[in-house]
Image (cartoon, rainbow, N blue to C red; front, side, top):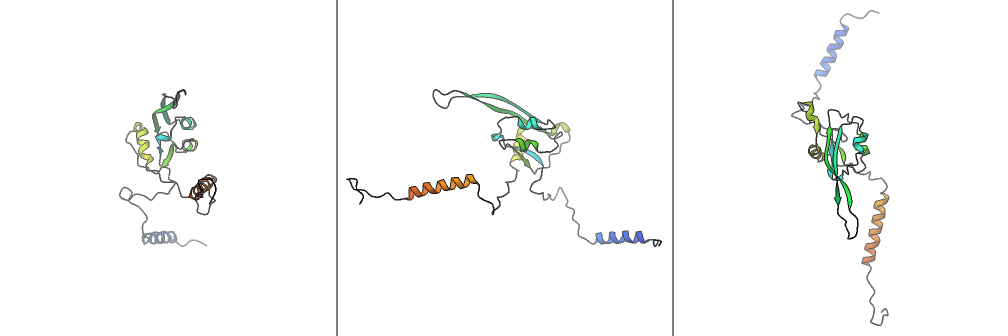
Length: 189
């Protein structure tokens, strides 16, 4: 059977009329900020206090876009007769976001939780050389990192917390137990 001439045009006009009557879902971006999902990968934030300059993030990065410089400092002995210790001090921590592919390997391998995903996504620059962000900017983004999701209320209490709670309860019970009065001869009354 041959198609009726103009049926394709009629179907197209029907689709157009149907979508014209629906409410639009377009958000006017600069004026209205988008609602981002909780696990959005925007940029990487640095919590500098947790960084021990172990270089794992830079070594594991497939794009080699993380630059870290540090120096060693000698820490005096804590006790007399003790030995001096040395520790790494962070001088530079930078990420070149023009190279970064947002894989998250650096965040996963960081053993001290110094790197986090921030939902910030507005960091465009007019010059590609300005996409290398130093630790000051990475620290600013750290404060936009959302709090981790709450634990499942039906989940089992972690062993560490349960042990600490039981120890605290035993200590509180021992302190609350009244001392028995004794007479001067050492006999209980």
